[in-house]
Amino acid sequence: GATVEKYEYQAEVSRLMDLIVNSLYSNKEVFLRELISNASDALDKLRFLSVTNQDLIKEAVDLDIRIQTDKDNGIITITDTGIGMTRQELVDCLGTIAQSGTAKFLKALKDSKDAGADSNLIGQFGVGFYSAFLVSDKVAVATKSPKSDKQYVWEGEANASTYTIREETDPEKMLPRGTSITLYLKRDDKGFAHPERVQKLVKNYSQFVSFPIYTWQEKGFTKEVEVDEDPVEAKEDGQEEQTEKKKKTKKVVEKYWDWELTNETQPIWLRNPKEVTTEEYNEFYRSTFGEYLDPLASSHFTTEIYLVCSTNCTSRKDDIVNFKTKNIRLYVKRIFISDDFDGELFPRYLSFIKGVVDSNDLPLNVSREILQESRIVRIMKKRLVKKAFDMILGISMSENRDDYEKFWENFGKHLKLGCIEDRDNHKRIAPLLRFFSSQSEGEMISLDEYVENMKTDQKDIFYIASDSVESAKNTPFLEKLLEKDLEVLILVDPIDEVAIQNLKSYKDKNFVDISKEGLDLGVENEEKAEEKQEFGKTCDWIKKRLGDKVASVQVSNRLSSSPCVLLTGKFGWSANMERLMKAQQG
Ligand code: ADP
Ligand code: MG
Image 1: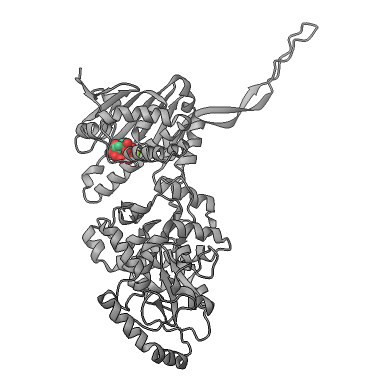
Image 2: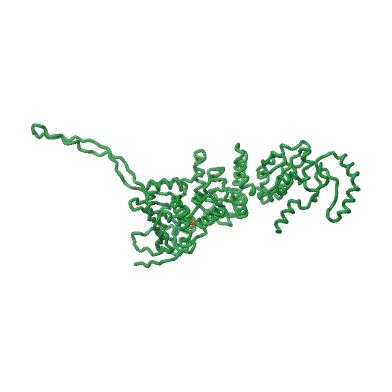
């Protein structure tokens, strides 16, 4: 017979399997979602590669996923006709932790432990192939890659530190192409092998997988059969009468088993937006992007492009510069092409928005270079950006102020980064910004709200950067402005000041730092001139005493009760910037 080779898992894998089994105990059913999503990935890969290499699909079988159940023996088999795996790929993919969902899971587990988070959350993360062992004593993976023409079988058992790989020799068990995963369920989990249970899980978790998923279901149809009527009883007198056989029909249910299409195969973005419910969008979002929270808003337009905006906090602070977020999935004529972009299709600072783009105008074998140079891509990007900003604006105008507060808390930094990176969209970004102000009690305001509240003779938008609202409110810089009832924006986020300086103005009103020299409050000029003369000599004297420690000494128009204040020159670093620079130099 064929040789069976025994391998040891990479050390982390056995540890991981342990963790998975223990942490996900209450959420075992995720195994099916994981295996289906692997099958779908394998089909995507095949379809994509076959565009340039027709040989890969020389076996004329449909691209689909079939789930067969044997409830008496507690066995589930998930079969796809995707790209399959070679022997080496089996070792690499199933014997080690790829840079995959499983690795992400380990990290999430560690993070949530560090944060003391609810371990329930973990159940929502992608855990990959090994989740099969949540419910199985034994797993067998038969797989055939179009690259090798040989079929291999990987077998592993729960709680074992080794697995085996052998070549399949039984002609009856040959797959045309792809992978077939057989789960031998644990005694207590055999219930998963009920066809209705599988059907429900598919509808729940994998409704929007873009390949057909068939489940093996028992069906029945009623048919009318002719039955003989009860034989007529013999007559009492013993005379045998010739019974006239009357025909009668009866309804019976004929049972049989067949494949049943279980998911929605038409992509959601091809449906009429009016006919898609919010719940369907949410579900699509969750299953497409492996998210566990619903999006805050979504947008679906021209029946080609679907965009959603995420609320969850996967983009942590330090993630803001890690732009490889796979947030835009590009399809060409319904075929998934790639989700690995670097700003070609969508600005990186908007990485918190997730979306699907389906184009009929790009070639199927679209490459990085094409993406970078294509006029179509540039137009697409423009439209995507416009729609994205419309969507955010929509949230900001929501009656429920909480929505935008939550949004701003999570993604405000991204938009401020946009002020720095994306000059072309300043007009769209600026109305979305929020800042604290000297006149709002703890609530943040928009620039529109500021402008509305400006005094009739006020020309500029005043701001001060500080480490907190409290300390800003106590600086002498603010005295005169408070007295004159002029509102001042208080910038407490380190990036705020740079963002504002990039914007320069809003609705033709310049941003003016009140901690800098040359503040024009439009006040009584005559009075000031008099004062200047009167105190000119005093100023000269003070400047002489301080020497190089200050650049100049002037009569101030911004104080009311404090005797003096230290200012930054018009072109110098603000005190806040200096503080930040110092902090960075460590
Ligand atoms: P991920 O899917 O996040 O990469 P998994 O643990 O789910 O992580 O799967 C590990 C790898 O095993 C996949 O990346 C893929 O290369 C391979 N694999 C799993 N299932 C299949 C399948 N049905 N067909 C082909 N390859 C598969
Ligand atoms: Mg996976």
